[in-house]
Amino acid sequence: MTRNADHTEGDPFYHGTRADLKPGDLLSVGHPSNFRGKPLSWIYFTQTLEAAIWGAELATGDSRQRIYIVKPTGFFMDDPNLTDKKFPGNPTKSYRSRDPLLILGELAEWQGHTPEQLKAMHDGLARLRAEGRDMIED
Image 1 (cartoon, rainbow, N blue to C red):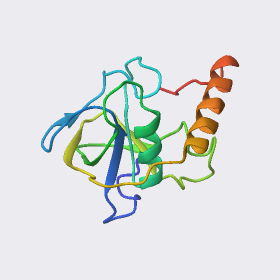
Image 2 (cartoon, helix red, strand yellow):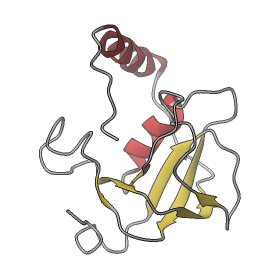
Image 3 (tube, helix red, strand yellow):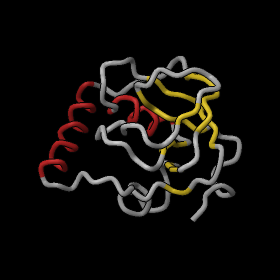
Image 4 (spheres, rainbow, N blue to C red):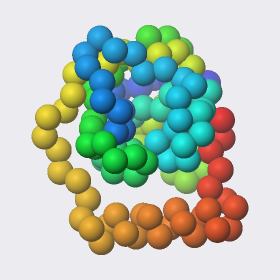
């Protein structure tokens, strides 16, 4: 189902990552995902800073964590990895698209999670991986 008309109008879209990009660049499908390293056929983004922070903090790699303000360039839909599976409805305002996201700018200041919160999230993801339940519906 498309969310183009149903997202919260006026709120910015974010993408958390470690990729080094600049305004005018496009984020597109086919690059390794933040979490698994394998290329995905969707690009993921959100309208909540909290979800974008997790994206940046959990992204693999050694580069600096970044949160970009992005603009979808085409059709997008709810992220089925979160919506109605983990969180009824779409409280994380998480979406995905096969069309590129235009980088509008970078969020200069944001507060990350505590070391304890990060450890708990990493431990939970490791548990899912060990159980074979860390799948991304692509």
